[in-house]
Image (tube, rainbow, N blue to C red; front, side, top):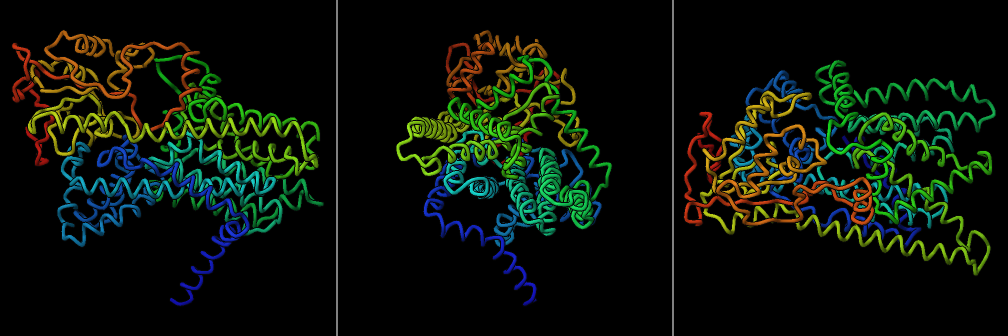
Amino acid sequence: MTAVRGALRDATGRVLAPLRADLEADPYLPYLLAVALATCGFGVWFRVPNFAAPDEYSRLIQPMKVAGGFVADPSFEAIRAGITDGRALGATFYLYALTLAPVFLVVLLTGRLGEFAALGTIQSRWELWHAAPAWFWTGAVLVGRFVNVALGVGCVYLTYRLGVELRDRFAGRLAALLLALSVGFVSQAHLVGEDVPMLFLLLATVLLANRYVQEGRTADFLLGALTGGLAIAFKLNGGVAAVVLGVALLVRAARSDDPLAELLRPRVVVGGLVVGAVAVVVGIPSVLVGGVPELVARITDTVGSKTGKTGGFAAPIEYWFGYQYLRGLGLPLFVGALAGVAATAWRLVARRGAGVHPLTWLLLVTIAFPLVVYARWEFVRLRHLVPTFPALFALLAAEVSRRRPVATGASRDRGWRVLRVGLAVLLLTAGGFVVAAEYEYVTDPRDQAADWIETNTAADATVEVYENSIADVGVPHGRETSHFSFPEERATNDSDLVLNESSYTAWMLAMPDRQPEYIQLTDGDLDYVDPDATEYAQYPERRAYLRALLDGEYEYRVVATFGDPPIGERESAADRLVDAALRPAVEGRQRGVVLLERLNDTGSRASQSVPPSRDGADPKVYRPDGNRNR
């Protein structure tokens, strides 16, 4: 045991040694990390005890359901069923299972293990959210987000290392600061998910690959294969790590006196393949317990669900690249990133690749490979492009560093003065954008709607919602919520919760029979009346119903709006680009919420009754005690 503790202590020391050395050598680094902690961490309490998005719920709930199923039936089959049921997650499962450990420790110490084990068998996520106490969800969400914040700060530090190794400490500081001030990255760090853990492992892989190119140590390559495999296990986008390692082999061989012998090192090539494959198989729990078919299903499901966008706003993939980069960077930082890549490419052409730092090639691959893959898609999301941000900033920072007077030898370099003004504008605008983003988190319209409902409505008033996830609505925990009865126990990787769209439409149109006191409309609902949204043309009956509801044709009036709800607005392609360039978007926050109140014949507040629906199926209604009323 002493030997094991010593080995762990030594391994931890080796991992932390570069960080300690950097902190001692660079007095600015602690302040940079403090900025990263502030931008990644401020506002992470938004939406608790609810979730920012359905993905947050699924990442936290699956370990909980597996644990509950195992307590009820302590067998391998119970674990396998819990892991493979519904949407299969990758290494996120392990990470957030560990994250939930402190919360479950509180449960254990308070003697409520049996109660929470029973919760793990509840199929409906709506019912589970209401049934579990608010403090449990608050603790689970906050701990999960704090883990993501810590990994986000780690990404900023690894980006600093990229700049240092590519050029110098000035480049490292600038690259790290730009990442800490980029809205797209900061928004990912605010949410429970796999994007930031995957990015952390990808950056570690790039640094290890560069170290292998420089020093040729087998251990560095194998460790890179491990981190690369884990990056893939977290998210298939991490597959770029495998390409980076392959390019590292080629670059190392090109710098060697015997390229063929360098390429055919069995301990490196075969060992890397084995380590990477094991990391992927073990890192994806559904593959570990379900075998290769689960891996194939995961890959095909990801490719099938991400490569298309049915209906809605139509534009070529080049447009979506520009739009999402602008959403994540803002115009000044977007222009700066393009300038950094252009300057790097010009230098490569001018030198014909001679004397180029090997890390440059690895960073270019980190940027180019995902774009080549996504070019085959019809649509790309911001989170798909965020992993290219650190490489873009490292290249930009290195090019800026090369033009500093200390590098050029000119004490009063006019070009540097101009560049310094440009940098000041870039940093100030990026800082302004990220401050605005933080403000948007702490003023999420769903939180404001939940507060309004709790303050201004009767305790037994029913709020009807049309979203299929509790994470998408803004209702107080434990308050009555009427929604369509989603058969969640039959939802799978390739099926939506709404397995019968016509029944869902009929349920919506039967609202007058239910007569809820309040109706809440969020972004997903307002898409039905948004001409640019997929749902606008796909569901004409729902569009007509919501349009009539908003126009006052039913006995409801808009009693409150929060945020900037997009009701029937149509934007041109140019308008979208301008809006993205000047107002970078944060993920996990909705644009607006509309609350409507039912009126009786006298125009006063309606009664509190909730009669059965016309189709004979009662709506799901949750009483304040958490029990469902049928």
